[in-house]
Length: 381
Image (cartoon, rainbow, N blue to C red; front, side, top):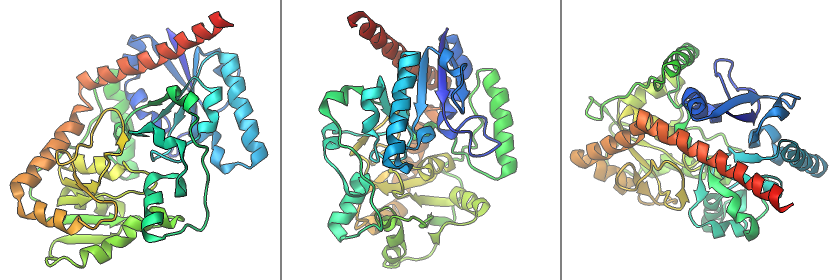
């Protein structure tokens, strides 16, 4: 049995069994154990942590971007020390976008896994305004400036072989709900996964009655103008539509209303925020609505959930074609229903026994390859 020791912050909510980013490993923990991986979670370093065979290090635990230069250096030294003591360390960059990277850790870890990466990885050898390729686009195209900037270290090509995908953010728990609902989710997950079953998800048929034409409500409270830009443009863009009936747009609704509106909507608009792929995309698949979202063909992830004109309707990053996309889907019921159905079927497949087995085998391969590299290092030394 390979002992995988995870180092991360405590869950953000007391009703969550593990930090949110580790949800797919948690719900598949028994299958992973059957494949020889015993995963344990730690919120601080301890003698027990160092008894693992491999360390999974969460970017959220180290919070490198929030530290001054001296503290930043101490964290890098700590990462190097963990790897030296355990032997193998994999860095899990759990931040939400293809950008905002932490490539300074690459010399001190065996792998660097991120939820999504730029499809053309050579693009990481340059810098971007706002540390994201799409905030750089907003800045250059519209002259939008942020009140403050962060800077990421470009990728050293000699370290690029360490880059890889952890898992699509859609494998997280995006069922959402009140505290009572979260408690039910936790109890059901614990029971169902005990019998090697998947989580309980309330799927809604795309053909269900949907009196709302489109839901387009967003959180816009970002302290970065380039991040908030798309969402702030929605009211002015939608006000130009000739048909206003059945539109719900503006600031995000209270949670129970937001969830209910999603299930009553024909179309849901999802836009970039801190990242390109966000919870609203997957909640839309669950609700059975058709998804309109900015084009994401610049990125790669695993497994693939976003296929243009198949699982979502892509629009330009400047939103200039949003009215056309909305009117086309609203007027063509067959096309809209097919888009919604394919999106839901694609996402639903991720929770089948077959795909859960694929997830487990893939994670096992990642661990085994990392351990094999350690043996190679030892042999060379």
